[in-house]
Every structure is written in C-alpha cells, then in structure tokens.
Image (cartoon, rainbow, N blue to C red; front, side, top):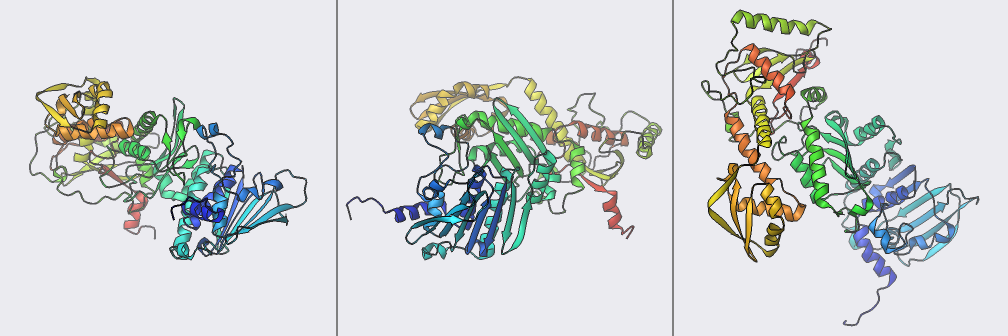
Length: 607
C-alpha cells in the first residue's frame, strides 16, 4: 500500500480521460479543435444517439503522416509544441497531446488520414480499443484530411456511462459546443448531422455580412437585429464583435460568447469588465448578450492554466480589463434612439421586457406639480418649470403645426423620435415620426438627460476631497494592507487618502465629498478586493454615480406635470443628443416604438 509504483499506461490514460472526456460533447470539442489546428476549411460532424453510439469528425486539413499515425494515439504526443519556450506563445487550440489517447482509452477509436499533397493512392488508419490499447496500422481508402471515428463511448467504464443523460440532452450539449467552435472560425465550413438528419450547415464566411449571417443563424436573428458592431484597436489589443442593446437583456447569461485569439473562454476579469460597461444602462438582475473577439499577442496570455483550457491568465490583466471596459462603455454610449428604433421593429414581445421595479419612488405617480429644479444650460433646455415656454398659445400652435407638417413632406428631414402630438395622463409623451408612434416616459427620459449632464459636470471638475474629522481605522489582511500601500497613489486619484499604520491595519483620512455619508469601511474593502482581483476598481465612480443618479431623479420632470408642445419637442431633441438616453438611470426603457404595421395589426387593417 505504501510503495510507489509507476502507473500502467491504460490506467494513466483513463485518469487523464476523467479531465478531458467528460461526455460526448467533450470528445466533439477536442476533435474539432484538432481539425481547426490542421488548417481545415471544412469539418463534417456525424453523431448518433447523442454521441454515445457514434461520433465521426471528418476534415480536409493537413492530415497525419503514416509514420506518425501510431504516435498520434500516445500520451503527450503533439505536433504543436516542442520546447518549453513554446508555452509562452501558444497559438493553437490544442497542445497537450492528451485528447486522442484519452478518448481511445474509453472508446473504440478509428483514426484515418492522408497527408495533404501526398502522392500515395490511399491513406492509412489505426484502430484502438480501450480494453487493451492495442494499436493496428493498415491502409485505408481516404481522401486528403483526417477522419476520427469514436464508437461506444465509455463501453469499458460503466460507472462513467451511467452518469450520462438522455440522448436529447447529450446532443443539446454537442450542439452548443459546435456553435461555440463555429463562431470561433468563420472561415471554416461546418456541418452537423444527428441520426442521419442534418442539423447545421454553415458555409464559410469571409465578409462582415457573411459573418453576421452565421451569428444570426447560431444566436438568433433577434440578437443581430438588436446589437451593435464594435471594432476598436489600441496598444496591441483589438476587440471586435457584436454587443446587444441594453433593451435586449436576458434573464440568464446564456447568450455570452467571448473569444481570446479564437479560443472561447469564461474569465472573471472579462466578465467583470463587461458587467461594469453595462452598469449604467442594464436593469438589475438582467444579463447582456454578446459575441466578442479579443486579439492580442499570444505571449500576453497564458492558456495553460486549466485542463479544458476554458480559463486563461492575462499577463497584463489591468490593461486588458481597462481596454475592454472603455471600448464597450464608449460603444454603448454611442447607441442613439435611431439605433433602438430600428431594432425595436424586430424585437420579440418577450425580449427586453422588464419585471416591475418594487418600491421604486422614481416610478410612483406624484399628485400635483413638483417644483422643477433647472439643471440644464439655456442652449439645451427647451422646457421650463412654469409649464410654458414663453410663447403665446397661438405661437405654440403655429410652431407645432409647422413641425407636424414636415412628417408629410418627403423632402423634409424628420428627427428619429419625431414630433410631439400629446401628453397622456401626465405621465407619457406621445410623438409621431415617419414610421409610427413613439411613447416616452417623461420622468425616465429627463432623469437620464439630467444624470448625464451632472456626470459631465463632475468630470470637468476635480474630485472634491472631504477630510474625515475622525480618521477611520480598518483591520485588514496583510495582503490587503500591502495592496493599499502599493496602490496609495491610485487610491489618491480616486479621492481616497489611505495610510498603513500596521501589518494588518490601515487608516482612511479622506474620501470624496460625495461619499462622506456612505459606509466608508465597506467601500474601502470592496475597492481593495477589486484591486487585488482585477488590478483596477470602478466602485468609487459607481458610488458617485449612484448619488448623482439620486440627485438627477429628484431634479427631473415628475408625473402629472403638464408640458406644452414645444417643451415636449425640446425633451425629444435632448433625448436624441444624450448618451444612453434609451434607458433611465435604473435601466428601465425611456421610450417604446410601435410601427404603423403593428398598429394596423391591432385593428386587423388589411386582413
């Protein structure tokens, strides 16, 4: 029992298979990645009974030499790395050399291949069964490329097989894996067949429109119609792909694909950066949808940190985090009402609908007219507390009629949100544009406008510091104290003055004036936690934005506040010029659009 023995090859392979071959979808992933690394332009996947009975992956890649066929099934045998230095710049999807050996140890495997450009009339095949791992090499009729056939998965490990789900469930996992890999390489044609029935047939895509069609096929046309394309490059980093509009939020994180140099990953640093970018526009509890690609020097990312290679480690994590946040933050800020109007015409009824916000004072109807605190500049403000705009009723009527007449002039330029026609119950603003009806929540819209202007004003001024009358002593771990000491300058730029007084104790001497009444101790702990995990923190800015949001809420137009038509039109024009105006500060939509076609259907016109 206490003697050390060298594991037998079969036992070692089955232990490795526990990491690599979890279920049929794991086999599909490894085999398709091998095909992609072999420069294949076409990959055909055939599956029977959810992959338990048969998995066959065929490609037209480079192929395998006859002399290497047996070696391909050996443990830690690979053509993708040869020296330790190669681990510092991995540009292939697979490199451990464990996949085929692990798969063959728990199945009946047949590998057929012919080298691309070979003069031989036939290819070669090797077969191996998990029971004895005996490998046989013999000629086989095969075109250029490689075919891997896996039969009777887990036939020799019944304990593993009984944990598999029903065929339909296992195939659903295979389908998801194929989707992820098909999105990683647009230039490869991918075909998937289940029980002799074609499931996917995806042609290679080169142009942006062709790539977008593949995204629509795999993620749904609603996602493409309600997303914006981003493409930004800076400091050796490039981010491109599709991110959803905030109104296309999901109840779960089921439509999120992020690729680093063509490898799909799930990384906490990446997830945090994207979540922060959506912070101001996403309703709480909802999740964004995205298909994003990050390209960087392979030497800047370590993919050899997890057996399944789903996790990576960035050598410059803070730089990557800040780049992702700033790129997506700017992309979301540039979304205009015209973008959302175009998307709303294809938005399914259930997508983007939000649950009622409990105990939200901002959404409550307030009886009487609340004094309106002016927070805008004279140039931007077209609505005033008094309910008029300084013009007589006849002048207002003439101005409104002139604006509405432009809707019927084909040569006139009509704003995206159109022109106001009425106010409903003192809560909603009704406007007409060329395509249909726009309904605006006045309070939500003006709340966002006021909030964005207050944020801009705060940015132009230096952070006002508030020295604490009694400095706050906080007991922290030694790691947190080291971080506070090393990041003292970065914390000072955020408006926090921290001093280390012991190995496990720090003292906070001043904070931003906006946060003087907040829970300073908890705030400092959260900031240090972010700095340790992500290299940066947005919590200070987030807390300041929360306070500005509250101030903006109380300074915005309230329900039952009567506005004149010029004031309504001024509100619409301000919405069109304001960043993130499609959502209020709490992530609720500020307006909805109904096209003439939708209105006609309500009254069954033309049916």
